[in-house]
Every structure is written in structure tokens, then in C-alpha cells.
Length: 368
Ligand SMILES: [Fe+2]
Image (cartoon, rainbow, N blue to C red; front, side, top):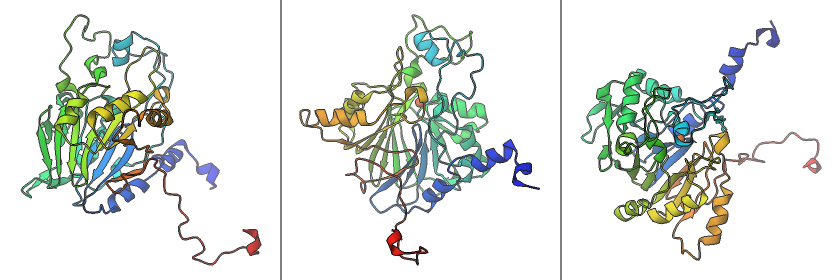
């Protein structure tokens, strides 16, 4: 038998995907978070893994899917939220633009699974299945062992329950709710400003609910933002919120250290992601110290260049006396706050730290 004769499509898929295998899972599980810090890993889109010095781990919007994989009939569903929004019918060419950096089935432990809302790129049946089937448990504030909870707004919980997550494992949250995870994370639920959620209907087919002339549906049932209070600071996850002046109220009500915002270049006729100026305005309104654009990575048709934020930031920071700065992350990267608070750009580890510590094998030193 030769390599060629044994090769199959299945072998290729199993040996190639997920692209990073368990590399990042190993990194996250072995990481020791320094006292007074919180470590975060960007899993793509708005998926973030949080870890504290006490080894409390939570995920927000962990998602394991992709976008279009075939042209099909070239049409989008008439009740898709984007079709509802702008009346388009041609298929949206949203292909996944970044590699897959985790293997959800390889994780051994998490303390809570959270979702900001129920759009497909923010929840994962794969992750839910693994958390359930592996029997993961955590502890409540009093140290009692409990099953790992699934936490989200009503529509997210409905989605989990539809997938087969027992309802008693789920906690429905709305703005104003406060949830404690183990001893060192407290989650404050806040208003979402994801207006794409407002035009999302239960059915995506021709029988979709008629929204014309109707008062907007209740955002609080569909989406929330989260403030994650950790030993390293308060981290604001805005889900897929659009820009809102009410960020200013959240900034007045809470001390916010780091804020994540969903950034993207909206195609013509579309209003779904915050633009560069929205990201700066969000940071200014929230009075955060660091703003981190996310979500820009994942869709080919919404891809945006973070440098645009840097350009505008440099243009406006002195005039507007910005008290924050941006941090430009990469998918699969780690950010520890406040340890990394002065960093502007993330770069993956470059390696070769031990160069010239073992014997070389070269003809002459002059080769170097
Ligand atoms: Fe999204």
C-alpha cells in the first residue's frame, strides 16, 4: 500500500481540520493566569475564552461553524434577517475567512457557556454537545458541585433547548441580571443594541412573520451585552451590537476596562456591523481603557481593515482627548489584562527563542 493508494477525502479532512488541531486547546488549558489578571483568547467571530487566576473558565459566543460552502440555487432565504432588512434575494457570499483555531471536543473543562444572542455565528451545538456528553461540572458560589450552566437571553435558551440541552441546565438572562460564576467572575447583563436581531424572524421561509408596521420585538428576549467582572478588570462584550448612544449610560453606570466591539465593512444597502468611527465612538462612550475590534475576521463579504481604526484614532485622539487606545488582535491570540494593557498590536509567537543553545549542523559559520 502506498500513500497515494490509501488516500481518501475523509483522511484529508480528518488530518487537516480543525486547522490548528489541539494546539490552542493545550495553550488555554496549560495557561496559568497571574494574580490580578484575566486572560482571554480570541476564537474567531465574537467567540472569547476567559480564564482567571483561580482557573475559572467561561466562553462567550463560542461557535464552530462556517458560512457558504456552495452556490446552491444562488438565493437567500426570503426570511433571513438580511433579506428582511434590505429586501435582497441573491445569496449572501459570506464565506468563512479565517482558520478554525480550536477543537471544541478536546476541551476538558469549562465553568459556564454564554451566548449574547441566537444568530448562527454565536452559538454552537457542537460545544453544547461536548459540554453535556462529557459530564462537565463546576461549583456554585458556596462550593457545591453543579452541572455547567448555559446562560443567555430567552431566544438563545430556546435554541439550546431545541438542540436538546435540558431546560434546567439553562439560565435565561435579561438586562439588569447579575450572575456569579465560581468565586471570581461576576457577570452583569446589559442592553444589547443589535438592531439586526430586531428584524430577525423565527421563520426564515416565505411564512416568516410580517414585521411591517409592527412595534419592534423585544430586544431583551433576543440579545444582551455582558460586563464580565474579573480579578483582572471589567470586560465589556457587546455581542453584535450596532452603535448606540446608550453605550454612554453603560459607561456611566460601570467601570469598564476592556471593550469588545463587532467591527466590519458593511456592504452597500446593509447596516450590521460597527464601522471604524463607531468603534471609536463606542470606546469613548463606554469610557473604557482599551477597545478591541472583533468579528471583522470571519466573513469574506464584511471583511474590514483594522488599520482604518488606527488611522482615525491617530487623527482624532488629541482633539477628542481620548482616554483609551485600541488593541488590534488576531484570531487564536491571547490577551492578558492588565498585563498587556499597553500593547497596540498582537503578534503570534514567533518562536526560535532558544537559537544557538544547541549545536548547529552547518558547513561553516560563514553560511550564516
Ligand atoms: Fe455575528
